[in-house]
Image 1: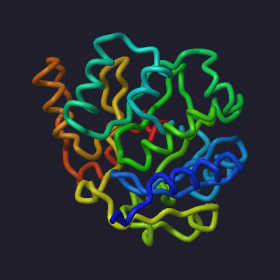
Image 2 (image 1 turned 180 degrees about the vertical axis):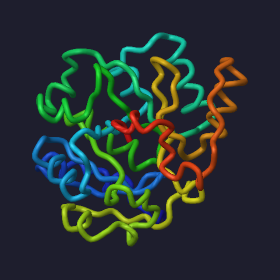
Image 3 (image 1 turned 45 degrees about the vertical axis):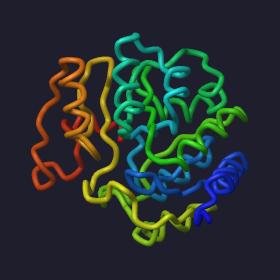
Image 4 (image 1 turned 120 degrees about the vertical axis):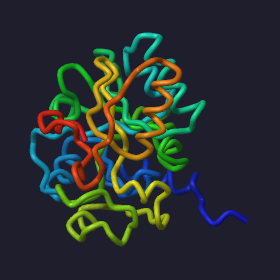
Length: 243
């Protein structure tokens, strides 16, 4: 007998977002918050104490990435290798298709707060709940955007009880699945700009992603200087718009 009802939890989450709410939910790379409209995302930003220059990421899947992003075939092959062949989590940054209906529905202001220079970050393969939520939402024409469920500068939270009270108070729904899979990394997702192959954030499973891209595609990513030297994982301060 299953102890989790992922289908029901995804349904509750998407319904909450469609009603203008915020959902705190588990992913393999830590607890995250998501919304789908300007008012909800602004409320979440304010609860986090997050700077207005920071960008949201879109919740997605391989299918959503290929539909929303306009990437070369080689890049899609790289991302598919990471996600499908090696089952690794990734936040992929790349150019989005202008006029895509999901992004249009987000609204101009929320879209501006979730994109940078014609690019958008799409988070994928971070657990079955996120995948089900993203898939269900897309089927119903609802975009899902968000970021880590934590006060800015306090690090990713890997248990629901670690999520601070201002974030919990902001949320209309909190889904608790206990300790998250990649908690030992103490960072969120690895984030790569696939238009330039620049690492924006070193995160969970980075050394595995690094190995896959080196062996199969000849792409050399920088070494991880370690948590003590780079606790946030952000490679350059000016790249902190995403993540």
